[in-house]
Image (cartoon, rainbow, N blue to C red):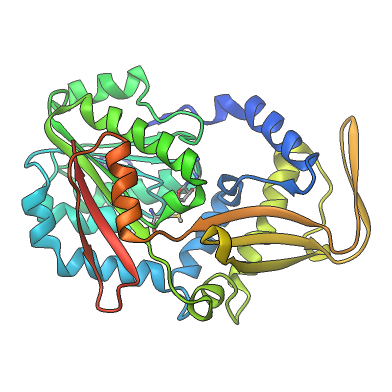
Length: 333
Ligand SMILES: C[S@@+](CC[C@H](N)C(=O)[O-])C[C@H]1O[C@@H](n2cnc3c(N)ncnc32)[C@H](O)[C@@H]1O
């Protein structure tokens, strides 16, 4: 890439929150059972491991959602307001949003992700392929608060998009990482984010549907062990943030379907008794004791539509695949 190649504007508010992240991690590690929020799965290596997961035969969500977006691109384009700002929550590789550029023709693209270095790289590469589209990268943890910082509003004004409708895009069924009450709170904030733009905005969101454990469990526990590596890598991220001494090889990856809660759970399970220390403290983990690292709730479309309504959105429409495995909802303001 030449040094004068256009670069996306980048704003990083995530690193400022390191203090809060440490407090959150420490509180979770001291709970019984211990827990670490799934956002800590995503450092730069975690993002690359996630991309590898999306290539696995067992991991149906990415290819299924991508096929829905491709097959129903024209309908989606008719639903979404013309000339909107596309705001991508948990953008990762930005690949899904990039596929929407053709059908919906956004006036600007705002990519938000906690995995700041990875986002910087993926957005930089995307900007080279779409030189005329103003792009903003935002390093932000939206699990505590989803709102655009003042500097992002100022950038939108500079890009001529301050009054544009906002299309908030939340793919990958990442909403499933939140327990239903938290999911509702996040959807309400997504609604407020849309409502702060021009008329015609809304939320385009991918949601994984309930299906048999025989399909669900291998998707989170693949034969090659890529998801296991993704889960264990969280311990390296925690070691960096908290100065803990977790040894990833001393923890087994566990993925199970909890039918009562309609969710896949990922855990790390201690292979033997061990003490994990950090400056000023330690915790003894018994052999077999678990750290809960991720929930992935599976929704029936009717229940998710009701949740969107409760969050303040208007009547939603949704598209699905031939097997009814995944849904993409358009929820207007
Ligand atoms: C399951 S991946 C989905 C990536 C991509 N959107 C897709 O659909 O393939 C979740 C993405 O959300 C990001 N993420 C997770 N928790 C986040 C948080 N609290 N704030 C911002 N980004 C987050 C991760 O870094 C990751 O890129």
